[in-house]
Length: 105
Image 1 (cartoon, rainbow, N blue to C red):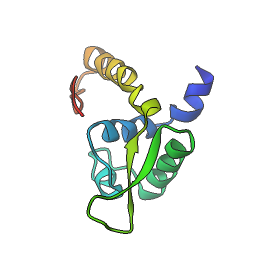
Image 2: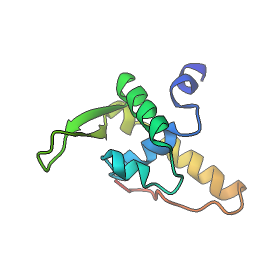
Image 3: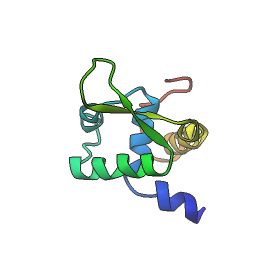
């Protein structure tokens, strides 16, 4: 558990993974998430996810020189973890709402 928490155990990382699972790929899309992640923290978390093989940089479809991000197989394997954390919050924390439903991209 300690090794996993070293990579995923801060306030923001799993939210970035959630956004990747929901199909977000551009920096500006992550910034627009309802939690309001600061840009310096977002840059750090994306770099950490890439470094640890959870996400990868990919060329954007519009041909821009910038890159987007997508989950690797290792990152997609986190889906049941995120779904479990979501379900726990829905069951135990009043006011929790769903942003990621089963079967979402």
